[in-house]
Image (cartoon, rainbow, N blue to C red):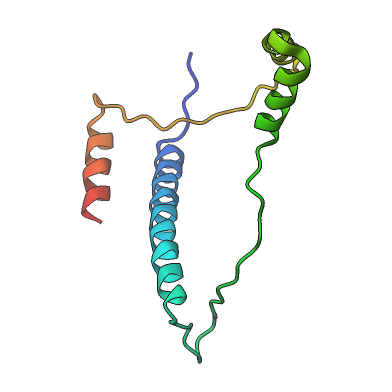
Amino acid sequence: MTKLLKKDTVEAYAERHMLIDKLEREEKKDRKRIIKLMKRGFESPTGIAFRLQLTEQERRDLSWKEEWQVLARRFMKKAWRKEMRRIIDNADITKTPMLLIKPQSQNKNVVEFKRRKKAA
């Protein structure tokens, strides 16, 4: 007999997941807008719990993977692809649990849940 998770557990998890996803998209959009405004001279208001400060950090545009490939091509000529393949094939494999949220279209509760989320 198949053991089933509680309906409330699954629905609560899926709802939180969708909410976090929505908040992350909104944060990304707001971040871009705020940075653009602050670069034009806008400042964070005073008298509130949080203050935003725009700073810049220097960072080099560098990809170690690309640098390794350049060196491999230079010193190993055509054999570099075989060596890369050998390294990849011999690397340890770690199983990482993934929890996918898939709507069950045959389940009316899921359809109602999706409609309710769109209205919010």
